[in-house]
Image (cartoon, rainbow, N blue to C red):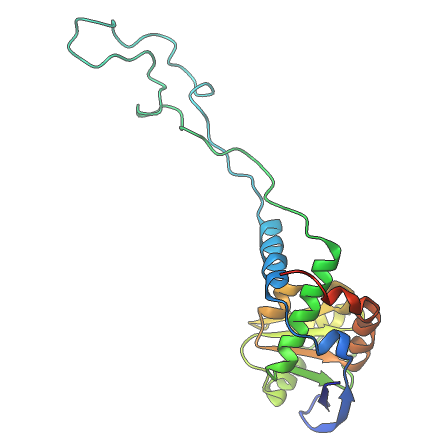
Length: 217
């Protein structure tokens, strides 16, 4: 069972916490993480690109010149893709790039990502995190004291608007909550900064599914 230090907002160590082996101590499953990241990025694509084919471009109904005798190549329409102002061959059309990932694979991917962060010492625990008012300076000073690196993912137990508004203008800092954790955001940061009550919530969400680690590569 992995143990990690617990810090306060000034960067001082105030103890240790034992993490669940089933959530934070598994062998990272790379294929599931790869699939989860691909799915996340694909779901971010709008898929709104569009261009006109030759059948949709205005004009071009009349044959440019007669078929034979002019000495020029034969053409049937000025809206052919090889003409300036013509349609686009194999024109892109609006579509959805999203694809579903099995629930067990998604859960395994999140646990693998968290376990890899713990293993690589890129996981820090806060005893508590609360702000009475929106104050970006307070969050910036906390991150500097904890030496979290350029990209930090702050994880709270529940959605906290005050913390979100305080951190949103800091470059490389993202704020999320336990129920909204995803593989991409965990892997895309230098440090996962999580509160103790958020750890309890994450273990509550993922620990019952310990058997899901047995997924074929």
